[in-house]
Amino acid sequence: MKPAISIVTLGVADYGRSKAFYEALGWSTELDIQETAFLQANGVLLVLWARDKLAADTGVKDDGARWSGITLGHNVASRDEVDSIIEDARRNGADITHEPGETFYGGYAGVFCDPDGHAWEIAHDPGFGLTEDGSIVLP
Amino acid sequence: MKPAISIVTLGVADYGRSKAFYEALGWSTELDIQETAFLQANGVLLVLWARDKLAADTGVKDDGARWSGITLGHNVASRDEVDSIIEDARRNGADITHEPGETFYGGYAGVFCDPDGHAWEIAHDPGFGLTEDGSIVLP
Image (cartoon, rainbow over all chains, first blue to last red; front, side, top):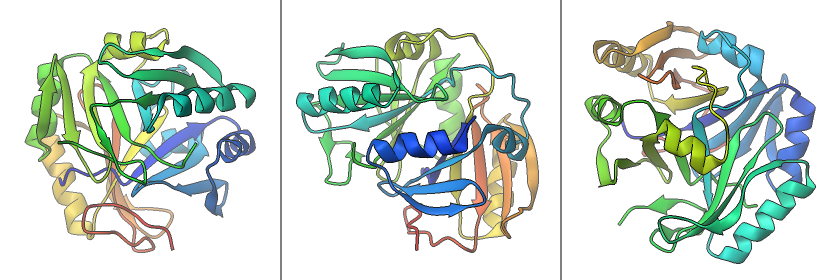
């Protein structure tokens, strides 16, 4: 297995609501096929798909729990960007589970949960380089 | 918010076990700081971190459920690669929740769950272009 993540698929309860949520935050749906939305990110696709279909396709039993044990990271170039994205998420109905503030590693971050509880940490980490498209490349 | 995923952090129950699992599959830990492993992928970092620390940092209550509602995708160039990665995961103790087979979209895929239940779909999708580093770029 080559170290690569090609797709992150989020199981969603209400397809239209989730698509509207991500589009309101600045993502765009480039393909929309049979209630499956493909949103291009930096070398990785974000896919929105009904949670029951994703569970069946993944071959797992879904117990309906809210938190995933996975946190998606979105790194930005400044503290102001952290604040502005968290405010944008709040305006769009996201739950802010961690208000922006100093982090233990000397950065600045806040966390929102999307309408299905998927967690996004919006972070400014001065220790990490960041490319134009939002990718981190380790030193 | 720019459409970008910089980091995928997996909350893990046993740090050493998870690091060994991913390393056995071909990933490499490029930074290992205070029981936090950073594994470089295609323009995105995979991070392994204790699930309780991640939950606290994310600001969520963890109910200990197994499935995440998120499936990570790893796309490859051939069906043989799907089979070989699934076998490799099986040999390393992963739970194969979906044996490799034809998909509804005309591809071929299998799914394994890592020691914490995080789901990875290993897929060959002839409809998607794939770059050398494992990134998909939509047409």
